[in-house]
Amino acid sequence: MGTWFKIDLWKRVIAALILGIGVGLALRQGMGPESSGAFAITWIGWLGDLFLRLIKMLIVPLVFFTLVSGVVAMGDPKRLGSLGGRAIGMYFGTTGVAVTIGLIIGTVLQPGSSLSPETFSAVDATAVESKAAAADAAGGIVDRLLQIVPTNPFEALASGNILQVIFFSILFGIGILLAGEIGKPAGKFFDAAAEAVMKITTIVMEVAPFGVFALMTVVMADKGLGILKSLGMLTLALYLACVLHIIITYGGIIKGILRLPLKPFYRGISDAQAVAYSTSSSGATLPVTITCVNENLGVDKSVASSVLPLGATINMDGTAIYIGLVALFGAQALDLDVSLTQYVLVAVMATLVSVGAAGIPSAGLLLAAAALTQVGVSDEKAILVIGFIYPFDRLLDMMRTLTNITGDAAVATAVAKWEGVFDEEVYRADDRF
Ligand code: ASP
View 1 (cartoon, rainbow, N blue to C red):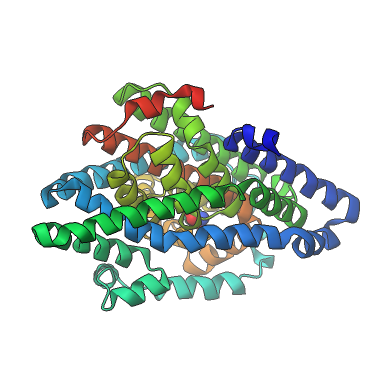
View 2 (cartoon, rainbow, N blue to C red):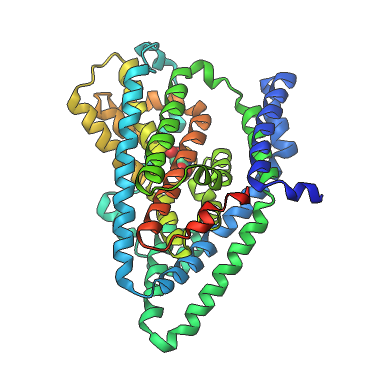
């Protein structure tokens, strides 16, 4: 038992991930693809569900308590403006670079060119159509912005509407600051509560190796690597673009701009990456991302608790890469020429749409329809292209979610350093590993 805890958590989590892939594929091989998925879901699916429920349980209290205590710790509401401005600027900047990398890779590798327009005639797109309609129902941009203001903050907390929770927490923190002397005990209370929730997160993370193992086994037993055959080039293009973005863009920010060594960054964030990869949800990964960024990367809680929840909802570089790639994939498969203007339109569209994508599984794919229409694919055909990819989306989603949360962590590190609330000693404490 002692030996188990002596091994660093991130090593246990990565080992569990690899073991899960192996066991899932072995089950698929041994039992056949029809029964392996059901078998894995019945026998170990519960372990993955337990882990997911445990981390989801922490999202709302963690965001609420740490964000209020973070705002109070800033001591000055004006600092919020500079912090928010920097974070949002970085989000858009990195997402723009991400789409560009995606479009370059998509142009070089031509993931859709081996398919012909007829491929899509046999696709059953009903499931996608109804989900896309539901996503559309979210309303226009003004409406969406209005929705950020909760009419009942307690309801927002209860339903886990993260943007509304962020909005109210920031205002509440400002309220405590403005209350001066009388507000101080409230500030202390939120500090203490935030500390307590962070401690629970650390306990829950001990379940991560088992949860990640179970989630990976189920995905592999259920879906297998079949995706590599049918959508091999698209998968390759996405994984390659994401890896390049993680190395070049985030590496460039950490090393080139912030002048920090790279190793502690990638090691420090690896738990969150493994959880993102196995859950396909930036939202569900949020508690782990906050803990990793705060405890391993030395980013102050005031930044981690404000920049990361916002990032998990609006900063999705992996999703933007993907949306750009799907647009090119569709155009190539349907033999459509893409002009330079259309490339630019796709890039803008992918950036904007990725902001609107929710941090939940498959959100990105459903929104790719918007980018497909930019390259001249009709609405009906767009749904067919998406319906074609949909059954295999999981393995693609895993990689883009991993990229999404890595981007959030890189931006949080940069903002913390610029705001002077970055503990470089914690970041550099390599002996942790
Ligand atoms: N699953 C992704 C996330 O949660 C969103 C997407 O589908 O691209 O970050």
